[in-house]
Length: 497
Length: 96
Image (cartoon, rainbow over all chains, first blue to last red; front, side, top):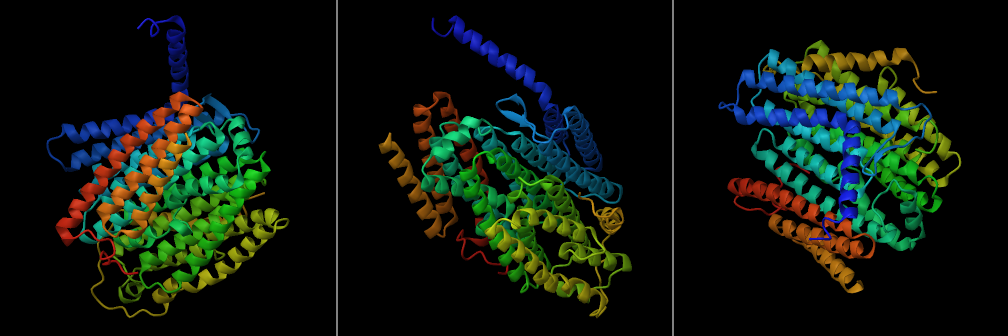
């Protein structure tokens, strides 16, 4: 007892409290998000009626308010950072600031805002029953990803990783149809398995490095001194969890089933939003490793092998798909392979812009695709041929296909070009990177073969049977506008230096 | 120390083996829990070596493991009500 109240103990406690108090200022964006989550929860438990128009209206209002507040604080943080590129500003040892990380958080926020707008449209038209639940889980996932980007310690990393995973499990469970359970079961079991592998990897990294604060130089120095076999095993296990979230090759099994079974809007959220956070986190990790050549080689080789495998498998299996959602799942796997290129070459100048641009184009295109598919209730590619479509929907499908394939009149072309031009800087001096570059280029050509099925079915093979489902969906108007934007983006020219 | 690391490794391998060979969803849960516990043992052992405060990690992992088990069990219950079994291999309504 005496020891407990001794001076040093109280002093250390006071010191910690002071630290926490000072750090709170840096966490204002997360505080805004958390306030939104708590308010949504209070709203849900304080109203007697589970569903209702007024409830949904308040929920969307709360979500938008907290997202705008977060955006305001994030922009403030971005402005207060000086311009020199690789800069780390520590709020505490538990979190860390870097321009890329703040940009990625803004990207997350804007992505969620897009879904908020869709819900607003939905409210103005007709309303869906699960809105409040959906918004709550979406905000929770966003908070988890936000904290994941901030983390500088494996404990905070693991906690925020799990927060976002658990929130996405629930996000995919909204709706509760028969086929959905199977998709969800596979997703959740694989997710838990991958995170268990990752945790064991983290425990070994702790053992090898003697610390779990991965922003400290001492951590990387100790890790570099470790025996290389153990290092490979530990990093590979750690990477399992990360790769699961990205749905790249050794951990891609869940993607096609989950895509087929889950509701479209949740899927658009889950397949686009978490990826920017995870990839930006990997880029930051890569740039911290930059001073330690041996470690970077291990990590770089691992990433390149995975990117290679995802590009090949994603593109070639997609050739055989007849189901539209499965096709999109495999195309996601291939796109993640391409997105790994700027992550691998993070040390070369301009990686951040290329990466964020590519991700934004990919996410928006996917959003349009899912909005269109949900609105017309299209499952198979053959459905595209069978149903009647308005000219606007046909053109939007065309934009989706062209943008995913990376063909000229769309932003997808600029994004692909940017990635290839940027990665050439690394490929010019590195054998494995050159192989990867060539594979990526060739697999883009392969990808044309299956993306072209979509416009082909729409424009040349129309059977135009009657009985087209004509349920107006709220996501349609934003989707059309985004499709237009994807085409107009080409007017700005090549956006990279 | 090596003894406990060995126990951790054995637990991990058993968990991994269960996940890779068993087709019952409940057995997957068992395997995953074993793997998480293996990581916990490692964490505690290494914390004793480097920094005792990092034992906190194990506590957090336990809480998260419970949350995950809750979700998986709830899902299993729903799945069992529909299909009257929880064999992963026989869940193939979604086409491959």
